[in-house]
Amino acid sequence: MTKKSPLQVARAAYKPKLPSALCGAVKVIEGEATQSVANQEEIKELFPTTYGLPVLKFDVDSTGKTKSKAPINVGVILSGGQAPGGHNVISGLFDGIKSINKESRLYGFLLGPAGLVDHKYMELTADIIDQYRNTGGFDIIGSGRTKLEKKEQFDKGLEILKELNIKALVIIGGDDSNTNAAVLAEYYKQINAGVQVIGCPKTIDGDLKNDVIEVSFGFDTACKVYSEVIGNIQRDCNSAKKYWHFIKLMGRSASHIALECALQVQPNVCIVSEEVEAKNMTLKDVVNYIADIVALRAADGNNFGTVLIPEGLIEFIPAMKALIAELNDLLALKATEFAAVAKENQRQFVIDNLSADNAAVYASLPESVARQLTLDRDPHGNVQVSLIETEKLLSEMVANRLAEMAKEGKYVGKFSALHHFFGYEGRCADPTNFDADYCYALGFNAAQLIKIGVTGYMSSVRNLTKPSVQWIAGGIPITMMMNMERRHGEMKPVIQKALVKLDGGPFKKFAAQREKWARETAFVYPGPIQYFGPSEVCDLPPKTLVYEQQDK
Image (cartoon, rainbow, N blue to C red; front, side, top):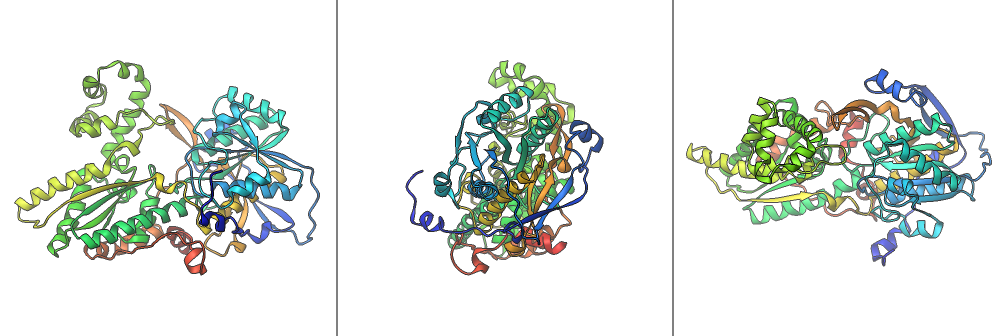
């Protein structure tokens, strides 16, 4: 590992706090049988041995007796994009299996799921683990986006698992990675491979959650990093008083990051993709909404402000969503033909192969945006929306609308825009105290799930707005979160993404204040993440989580 900064040296001494149920002898309480959130018959058919399992809860064993267990070898994989706290999940898992038996061993597969298939690994010893406690990043073993979907991959992975006598595999990832974990768990159980598979909920986007997965790890840290930088921009904005800052934030499939940051910093405008879709808004409607606020502030002599934009906004505009869905299928089915078309003719090729309505929408787009919609797909066959410069598209269209309003006598002011996209800046930050504790608990809890011999479960720690000793630990069947969705032109089982609920506490809190924030300069400047000091400064959970729990 590289040389540690003074903060890292001090931070290494931090001792994450565990739920009381995991601090001694543990007993398991089984809930009722579960079912998937949708498409129950299809999911049950695909996962016959791991469907319908009960939700599990761990509690203090009042007998106080910890039964001795044989050593167990465990493998761990970091899958997908980075999220703050991954190292603490691994640290908690390491300590957890050592608490089962000090001779237990942990192996990390290198650079994601590919490490399992290609038999690339390293043993994670105490000396190594101690270097990474409470640090950001996934660099302890690296991550990757290889998908575990094929029987050949499962069988190849099983070879190394048997060679190393690994009895359990923990996959730390987002919705797609945990979907792959469920598929792997099902296959290994069907062939009696003797390998458990456990998932851990990771994604800064915040869209992997439900009643028993309250928040994915990394969300809190990333949002606090973004909020600090947005706050800095807002202070600069309020000092110079001459720029409108259009800020795009990560969050392809949901607006959780944008909403959390809005509640933290109180911008003039925050677009919530789910509301745009629910109101059937067009791109023009979104532009007019922003332009009206710019004009309103200009009338008060304020030619400055901030606009927060979710990364995936384009896909939530109904006409654009329909276009992108057909584009995904078209480019999956005719990828070879499209690649063979000369670059200058590709736009016309797309128009000629789309339905009339979608062709009209596509033809109306600026050349740059149209081309961005046809760039290489992500591993799931979808448009890489992070490559679409939505912030620049909106500011350009707002400028054009303001020029029209000026001619109509409805706008008197100056409009100058600056652009930002915050994404990678937050993915590998040192975890907040909340994420450090939560991640450590997820890893330690995963060890308990391994101890009781279950497979196809996701590590679940909830009641997260309470002090950590009151957190509820247990496991949730991964199949419980699944539905069927179209991927690469085919229907596939996947974990259902959680969208912002427009009738939920966080959005209602935002909606009640946004008109005031729009006109006034009500900026909040959160400042940097604090690790040392009073609990009310250092241990705060995400605001959206607080308002969600207040709803319940």
